[in-house]
Image 1 (cartoon, helix red, strand yellow):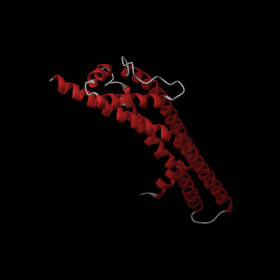
Image 2 (image 1 turned 135 degrees about the vertical axis):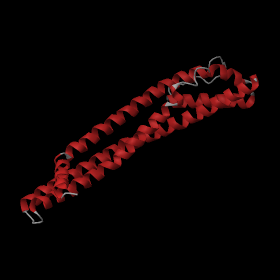
Image 3 (image 1 turned 180 degrees about the vertical axis):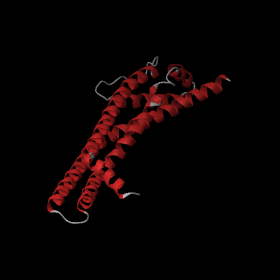
Image 4 (image 1 turned 120 degrees about the vertical axis):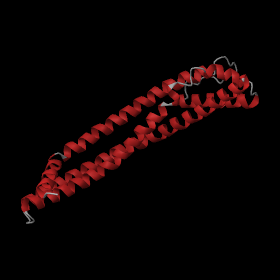
Length: 213
């Protein structure tokens, strides 16, 4: 490959390395905001689902306003499993309540959350690499500009560029790692709840269909 083409490519990337870093920051921030909004919406759906599943059961657990949405939802799932294990005929009652919930977003929303969380995790790992890239570009730029000869001014500029990109890469990596760690337990709980809910509903609907046939 022509060395002038490589030099031009390095020059373009070097001149825009900070723009590239901040573009990744914008993308990562947008992903974090999106996943937060998805989780908030998921909680609202869980409230509706919990109320609909326990509709008509006088011995259903009371709604605890002091507990969070996930605890109330888990309480509803535990109540369903308890009732069904003691009286399999309860499946039909729960099946009636579950009608229309099969297509509710609670069954699929966790997938979107999981995908976005995976993207967030990947971009977090990219930030240190961008810092290393800035260092390599700074060294390469110095070599291309001076044809292998050491120039104090160019070397100083390269050092500043290398330090700035490395510091930015590490800083944003740590920042978003903290954000990701704060979101991770809730994401895992949402995924586990959704899978458990889907398993219970599928079991109820399958048993009800077998009974009808």
